[in-house]
Each structure stands twice: as C-alpha cells, then as structure tokens.
Amino acid sequence: MLTHRSSSRRRLAAGAALVVTALVSTAACGGGGGSSKKEGKDGKAAGFNAAVDKLAGASDKKGGELKFIGTQDADSWDPQRGYYGFMWDFARYYTRTLVTPKPAPGGESSTVVPDMATDTGKISADKKTYTFTLRDGLTWEDGQPITTQHIKYGIERTWATDKISGGPLWLMQVLDPDKKYKGPYKDESKDKLGLQAIETPDEKTIVFKLPKANGDFLQMLALPAAAPVRPDKDTVEKYGQKPFSSGPYKWVSYEPNKGLQLVRNDKWNRDSDPVRKALPDKISVKLTTNADDMDNRLIAGDYDLDINATGMGSAGRQKALQSAKANVDNPQTGFIRYAAFPKTVAPFDNEHCRKAVILAADHTSLQTARGGPEAGGDIGTSMLPPAVKGYDPGYDPFQLKQGKPDEAKAKEELKACGKPDGFKTTIAVRNNKPPEIATAESLQASLKKVGIEAQIDQYDGAQSTGIIGAPKNVKAKNYGIIIMGWGADFPSGQGFLQPIADGRFIQESGNQNYPELNDPEVNKIFDRAIAETDPEKAGKIYQEANKKVTEGAWYLPFTYEKNIIWRSSRLTNVYTADSYNGRYDYASLGVVK
Image (cartoon, rainbow, N blue to C red):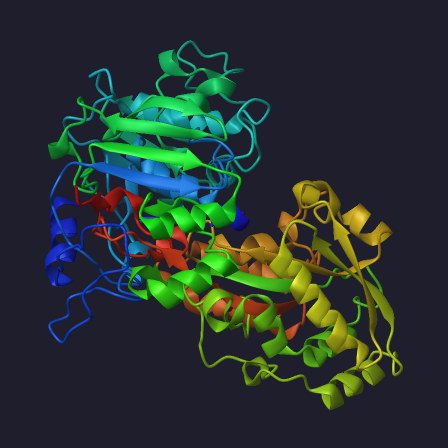
C-alpha cells in the first residue's frame, strides 16, 4: 500500500455492542479546545493516546455534523478504483460488502465479520469454494433491493482496467489469475455477468470458486473493491463523482479538491446493518492546500479530524502537544519506512555490500529525520510491521534497535564484497517528501564515514510509478538505494510483504518490489503461507519469509511509522484500528451536537 493507501483492511449489532460495553465509556467533552478527562483507574478513556487501541467517548447519541478536513482528495471515490487508505475507511459510509473489518480497536479490527452476508461464508473442505447468503432488508438509496448480481457486477468492474483503473487487483489475481475475463463492458453475455469464478444462483446467494486456496480471501472481500454497483447506475469513469449508495449515507455534493457532503440515506435499513452506527446526521469534508492552516483549524475546533490521517505538521504538532495534548493520539500506522537495494545496480547484487549499508547507517539519526519516536515511529528491525501476524518484537538480526552504526562490521562487509575502500552510488528520493529527503541526507552522512559516497537524486514524487517503479530506469539512473514506504492492503504477510518481496510481483512499470528480489525459496514460502487459512499458522510461515528477506539485506528498515493525529473534543466512539493502518474507524464516529 502506498502512503495514502494507508500502496496497499478490514472488519455485528451484537459485536459492536460488545465492544462498547467491554471498553468502558467516557462522556465526550464539548467545545473545540483541549479539555478532556484524565485516564482513571476505572478504565475511562480520555486524554493523550486515549483512542489508541481502545475506545474513547462511547455514545449512541445521533445527530450533528461530523466535519473532516484534509489536504489530499481521494484518488477516486469509486469503490473499485480507490486505493488510498483513507478512502477505504471513508467508503464504508456509502458502500457495503459481504464482510467487513470488525468494528473494534487495534488488532481486533483485523478480523472480518459479516456485513451484507449472514455469516462469513460456508467454506468447502478444500478451501476453494465460498458460499454467502445475503441478509434481509438490503437496499440501495432509492429503496430497490441489493442483489448478489449487483455484488458480482461491482467486483467484475475491477477487470475493466482500461476504464476502471488504479484500484486493488487482489480479487482479479485470486479469482482469475490468467485474466481470461475482460470485464463487464466487454462482456458478451446478456446480463454482463460472465465471470465464471463467481456464481449467483439466485438474488440472495453468491458463490466464489477459487483456482487455489487463499487464506486472505475474506480480507479481500472486505475491501471496497468488493462492493456492489448497480449496472443501471454505473457511469463508468465518472462513477467516483457520485457513487450510488448501499450504505447509511448518500452523496449530496462533490467538488474535486474542494470538498464533499453526505447526508443520511433514508432507505438504509438499520436492522440489516450490524456494523455501522451511523450517528451523525451529516458528514462533510473540506479540502485545502494549506497543511499548517488545517492543523490550526483543527486545534481551534473548526473541524473534527484530518481525513488523510498522515500526521500533523511540525508546527501544528508542537502546538498540539504543548497546549492540547489531551486531543492527540500517537498510533502506529502499519507502515514501514525503508531503503531498498536493487540487485541490478552494482554493487548491490552482492549481499555483503548491502549489509555494509545497513550496518553503517545511524538508525537513531534516521528515526530523528522521520520526526523522532513520536512523529516518526519506533526503529524498524525487520520487514514485517507490528500489526501483521508474524512480527516478532525480539527479532533484530542486525541489532538495529541499539540505534548506533556499527562501522567496524560495516567495513568488514565492504572487504567481503570486494570494496574495502567503499564505492559510489545514488540514493533516489521523492522531492515532495521532506522526511524522506531528511532520511536520505542522514544515510548519506553515515555512509561517507565508511567510504561509501552516495549522491542524492530528488526526482518528481508525482512520477514515482515510471521512475523508481520502472526497473529499466532504476538501472539506467544507477539508483542503488531507493527510499520509500509501504503499508499493508490488509493486515497479513500476503497483504504487506508479498508485493515487495515476491519475484512474481515485479513489473515493468509501477513495480513495488524495488530490490527485484526473485528468490524461488521465498516465493514458495509465500505459496505455503497463502494456502494456510489459520491466521496464526500463516503468520509463522510469513515470519520465515520475513527472515529470508531481512537477513538477505534487501531492505534497510528505518521506522515502524507512527503519526501524531488530532481528535476533536466533539468526537465520540473514537478508536484506532489496525485494519485502517492506525486511522480511526470512521464508520463508528459520532459527534456531540
């Protein structure tokens, strides 16, 4: 998952009620300032980090306007095209899926629960066939019933990559790996439902037939890309301008890069939806280009939260922590910020040269460049983040957590790779990401001490896909070190590690496997893990892959990213969810009027 995918999710009336009662509630504070209750022995959540992996301000009160602000519009509000993480979180206001992330804090959200379906599916003994039955009372915003044919059609739109581009392709890769189907717009069948991997024997039954078992298939069905779209309302490329609602809110207005408004969908049937609280009467999003002004207006109480949730800027962060810390949370985002070493660029085809860079780096300096422990995150030690099963907090093969460079060992590795006096290389970094530029400069300074001369090339960050995402260009530009970040499309080793470490994911353009790592042993480990449907067992297999990738020195992890994010005193039912990369679960939020 990319930065705003946060390139690259998941999860009942009873279930939601259990969350609220199990996590003791607190009354929300009025006004827009920093007032809040201190966290007490009775377990009431309020104050700094009150909503990190726990519930702050439990309430069932309806009404009011929930006010988002942000500096980044969605790549698309079309459920099949959107790939930014905040879009996936926000999309649950107007889309529904068969299953969805559990409405619960932290790691609990990584499990899926029924949404439009009555359960999480009847799964065949060979784990290849999934059968779902729809709940009663599912309706579109005009009152017409939602059918399984609408769900199938929505999913099929993913195949129409010439018109519906930019979204996640997991369902296409799993259901139709040979890409035989061409999408509903080229479908010659009368009902445009020709995808053979999905059957809809009636309007309430849908059957998925996988060529191979995949333990994360339910996670994929929880993505907005699996949301229904009604054929007569499909405006193809324009659908993202005003999606037709299957959820509790419907679109009123949208001006790209300026803002949007949603109001209650009066045809939404609460009895059919055990997941969404649907507390606000109205939801608005204001988009601005001035990040500092946005932070100031959040602190002033004009808005409730930053929809992008990429973290407050340095000035806003300092002001918030000093004067209104009770309104601030500091969650893990699920991202790793790192450097990658393309093996096609000498001398990074040599494992020892890669290790020399890792050992020579000053990891505390890199952490500081990212913003320090609070705004930047914890020092990374491997290529699985804490939110993904398989992560081992004690695993640190290069002793990175100590925070210091090991110049002596780095020089030993340089000798082992035949470069005792060092070598020259180029660090590629996006020109529109100041923290990345700062990490490049930190790394450059550290490497110089062991004889590695690294020049920094700041390229156009808006063109990443065709610059660092094009292996031929990487080699031509001598990009030996690429600075980037990655977050999971869904919280598993497949969702996080496979796209950046499996050789079968290498692409000519839009490549994310920057080292171009194509180790048959690693690829086979992914196959074993994906076929395992028990998340705990799968996690142990993904740890094997993590060790191969980490110890092979293909990546230098900088930080397990953390952000400083703002929550207004008006917000209720606030908690961070691992399924949304440490963002608040937007569909659960309410406001004090």
